Image (cartoon, rainbow, N blue to C red):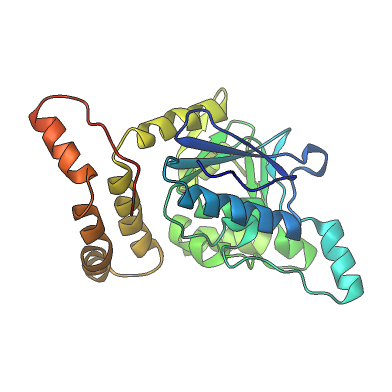
Length: 267
């Protein structure tokens, strides 16, 4: 395994050899993310995609917040100096506009506001503790959720509910967020443990099939119609799966009535 990026805003760990757990670690600042932190996380997710043995990423936070959004003190200083804050093309936390190859799950342990909510909206799955709260409060501070959430939240919850979130900035509790479709599950217990259990399920499948299946869903998420997305998947991504070892291993293992032994993905 290649060494991971050096980090100072988050902690990297491995619940299993195939899973990368990324824990935001600025609890006193409610895990708000600075411009430097955005670049750090972008490098972490790129490392996840490039490391063959890793299959799934998980993002969570320490303390009572998942992520309260951008570092507004830094933003205020940038405004005062006339400097523009930079953000990677993958968006806030390297995640709010990320496409990537491998799935990233959000284990939302508490406050999930602003950029934190933008990251959750673009995560592949979202698990929330009963204490989790979600909000796009940017309008209350004279700013806009510009890191990718606005068009995406409309796809997730529909226009009217997206408007309610974007124009009022009101707070959604975990169960309401689940009812709206923003959250997969509300967890009465350790949300990270629940997320790890699902990540293990994903990591137990063919890594090639996971990558291609995720791409098929994301083609629709990014706006392609069903037929156009299917044709693009068949033409560009599916042939890579057919050329790999894992599709042969999966079918052979089924016929031989044994558990497949997957190879690290080369897609």
